[in-house]
Image 1 (cartoon, helix red, strand yellow):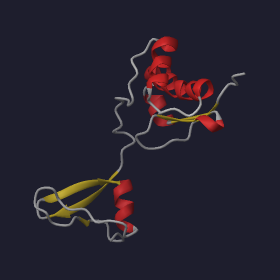
Image 2 (image 1 turned 30 degrees about the vertical axis):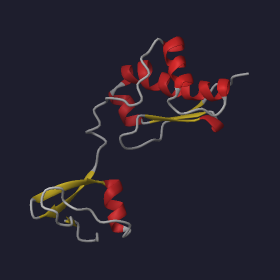
Image 3 (image 1 turned 45 degrees about the horizontal axis):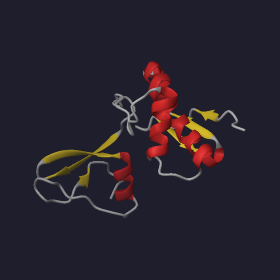
Amino acid sequence: MLMRPTLRFDIRGKTAGMAYFELNLIRLNPTLLEQNPDNFFTEVIPHELCHLLAYKLYGRVKPHGSEWQQLMRRVFGLSPRTTHNLDTSAVSRSINYRCGCGEVALSVRRHNKVVRNQTRYLCRKCGEYLKSTVTDAA
């Protein structure tokens, strides 16, 4: 028997939604939902729901495999796209770095990797290592 999934509105960043099939859970980005309600109801929620349905009906399958694609087409009549095309400028944060070329914006995720000394990034143009303009970063 299929149970109604739990919905949580707690994803941040550029991700619109995520499905956790073993938990029967869908997490949604509240900021993107507020800015794009029609798109969420016609694309994002059906996309995530098909992940849960694919798991319930077929077990572990590829996330965007043929079973998921068939459900998108048959249940919702949608083209099975794997990514959204929402404007994420309101939820995108970046940290400025500099090199010989000038300033380069790095995502928060990449910035945090630099801060934790997990990596360093090279400028694609001049080849210099990027240096943070934030005083407490590496």
